[in-house]
Amino acid sequence: MTKVDAAKFFGTYTALAKALGVTKVTVCNWPADIPKKYGHKLIEAMKAEHALRAKELDLREKLAAVRGGAK
Image (cartoon, rainbow, N blue to C red; front, side, top):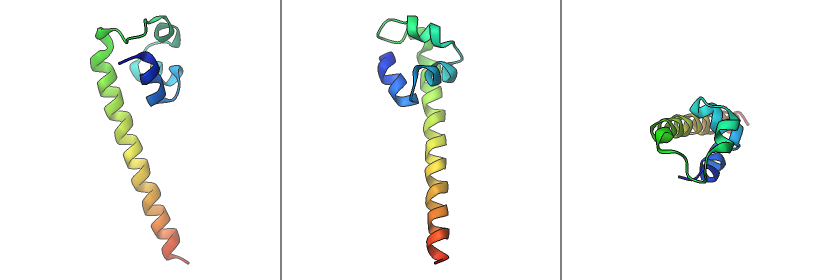
């Protein structure tokens, strides 16, 4: 995966760096493709981020249902 694609997924290079436990400088110094040694960390971070987004979406849907039912 490219660092641009990963940064798009997380929103910013800073968020990508935080998710991987490295500095933004480290991420910015990578070549276009993320170094293989970060591959496993990246996959785990993306899974965790995806789970958080799904949970947030579920909570928003439940809130909307409650608000819609209160009308």
